[in-house]
Amino acid sequence: MIPRNKPKNIRTKATTNSKKPISKLPSSFTRRPSVSALPHSLTPSPDCNDQEPAFFTNRAIAYLKCQQFDEAKRDCQQALNIDPKFAKAFNRLSKCYIALGNLYEASISLQKSIELDPSNKQNKVDQKHLADLKITDSLIVKFLKEEMWEKCVTNLTALLADCVLSVDRICLKIECLCRAFDFAQANNFSAACMKRSELVNNPKMLLWRGKVLIYTGADIVGKKHFT
Image (cartoon, rainbow, N blue to C red; front, side, top):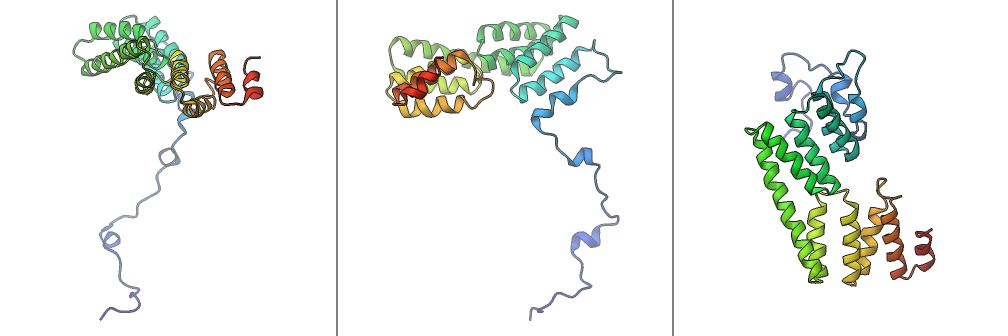
């Protein structure tokens, strides 16, 4: 018969097996910093050797995670100013160029990283991924010539998963959506883009957002994007 009340002297297995009470971890371990604060937590301290290229490439990774690609690129270039043969800097620089939509420069940087560190397995993985992105980009060019707008949109969506700050391709996707007469999706996509701080004041983005608003009947609001 199951007792109604649990006896007070019964302890759980975890408690009886514990020899010592678990002390609280320091706040630095329990408190997880926000991602946006991460790069600023890696600023050089007074005793830091600012001639160490690894510092800048490590901070570049933090900037990449925060999608601050121009800052990441600047740190990679600073690392290469210190050591022009630092392979990791070229590898991470290629990631910056991919995010910004410059696949040509990404290829050059990645090839330099491979030449300097041919045994690095990550370089091979990144090379394969970059090759796939180039294929997707070539398909976009092909479908544009054939005026196959929906296929353009599909491939642009795939490419923008990596080229997240490629303004030209973002605008091209909006244009292709409009040419496919998918104005609802063009409106939703352009509105979402305008919520991003790095795009909200971009002249090309303002132009296309204004066009979409006019196409969808919001003429007065749309024309304000042209001024």
